Figure 1: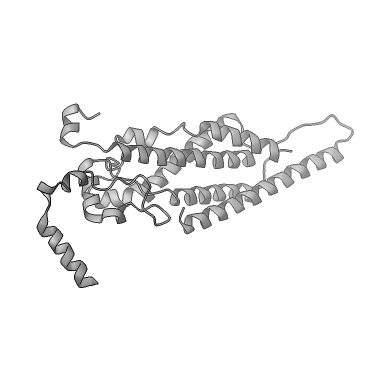
Figure 2: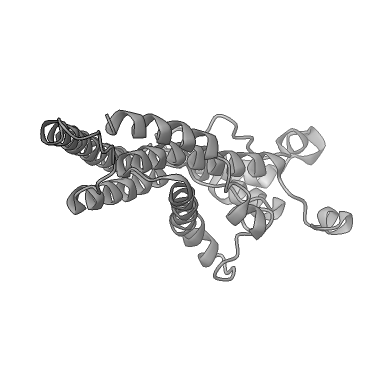
Amino acid sequence: MPTERELQISPIVPESVMHNTKTLSNLQTLTASIFGAAAGILGLESYSGFLFYLIFTIITTVLFYTIRVAPTSLKAGHGFFDTSRYFRTQYEFWTGGLFNGLAGYILTWTLFYGLVRA
Amino acid sequence: MTWISKITTAFGILLLADACYSAYEHSVLQTHRAASLSSLAASHNAPSSSLPIDITIETIVATFIVCLGIVLGTSNLRPIQWRVWAGKIEREGEAGFLNNNGEVEKDYVGNPFRLLESRPGFVDIRKQRKEFAEWVKNK
């Protein structure tokens, strides 16, 4: 966390932070519902279902990084996995929204499992 | 949502729907077969005799395509450091803050100091003179 002094020297725009986190969390919630449909179709059970969710959410975050963050961030000279241009901490970007869509995932998972398994 | 993201997402959802219906048909076939075969024996209710491999592959590929389509449809991120953000406004103006439809985003603030800069004692008269000359030239 930057100190008060560092925030006075290089301040942070709060509406940009809000916009970025809102974009990321909307994305994760929306894709989680789609992953639930896929898990229901495949007929995954308890542990493998949650593992499926975790893996695909991480894939989504990586995809989001390569499409939205990396082009401008690398051009501006940041490091290879540095998200400090758009997000406050790397931890928040990669792991903050990991369980964001879990509710929607379980919802569509049980729905499609019941529909497809007759 | 740009048009390419819409196309990709729609195609992915189509594939997913096809996989869903195929899996449903498969499971109906299984129960029908089990019911007609073991009408004597007790119901050996093993619901998930595994799905054919092509339906599995189709589901996973469809998931990837939908995910790609949705990620392509996200809006541009904004820089969070104040100097980068203010520099972007200064250099690109409104053109740097377009959303996916090409319009300026609704919560675009613009130059945060424009009220200060339009005070009479702080007017940059040379810049305004130059802008007026260019406007006359371009008319």
